[in-house]
Length: 145
Image (cartoon, rainbow, N blue to C red):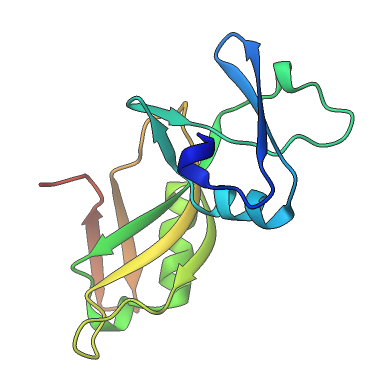
């Protein structure tokens, strides 16, 4: 993992057993880069990372949540806004942030939101949204190839 992350000040990895490890970084920049780069996969397994607070026992932490960037495609132009991003994010899990930089030819091709998901629960796939008083839309959030 150290070769993958390239920490500025090094890393110490301790095996706690029961598929749990402590990654000790010596620079806050390294910690933020790793946390913001989630989700991470290693040998086809999702790594669920959580910061350990002083006094916490890392062997008993509840590791059920992680953060994902989610793309929402095929939205009408008027729905590519932060209030809608918050609705989508809170429907899927917990809304964290909205990427306003994604665009194609001055028009948004898709909405990108960062959400905190419970990885022990099934993914939610469909949601009806009411936009104004005139139309009701249902979005399919399932993965397609």
